[in-house]
Image (cartoon, rainbow, N blue to C red; front, side, top):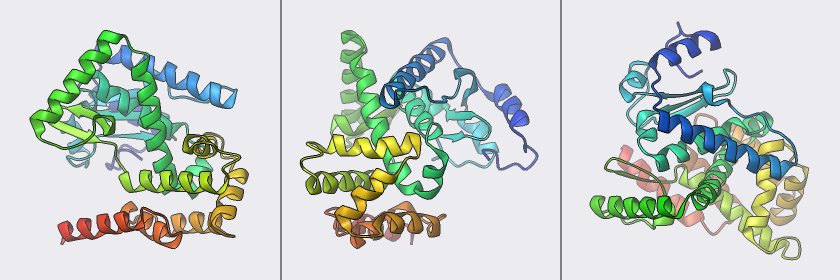
Length: 288
């Protein structure tokens, strides 16, 4: 449930409150509708069928101060509520076209995920969502006009220089004010890409690129069909690895994704294991 206030305990009530709080400008409404149409066409092409997608009228942009009143901290920028068929973005994530495109794609990709896949493989689901978001955002930008892309790139470079953050422009998820934000859930994202690389190496005749291997994860994400993915993972890393990934996700709910991803990477001897372990140590050091 989105609101931590127990008084807001129904989808209808939730939508009424959000409608009251939400403020969407005409340019934002146009971007939202364009992105949803683009994403829906992409998934339809992938699956050769229609997939349920959140209507644009059920996507809300809420001021940060209003979110704070309902118990969400300063770092919370967006979320989705599948049972209520709603997506909420903070106004920080809707401050410009590039940020809004990112937010809509990311949360809608979560919404369109098959629910059993989402429940049983939530760390992988997050990593797959990040990669789908990155690829789709890039594809969406490529179909924009040449002038729009030029302005976008100019603004990104300016923001990176102004903040002094050293980050490749292709790793920028969005820019909002003085914030230059890379793609989130980095550990989950890295873990997912590592698994794709390992599968590609194990089955070079079947997958010529990591992108082709990722397509199996993408299909599992939207359809919940995991038999082929299970076969690939078990053949690549050993029997019952697929079940291990499901079980650790079930047991680890509520725990930090960085720790779980580092554990999985170590168990499977993935190239990223040392990097992920270092992230965990750094993170815990900051906390303590």
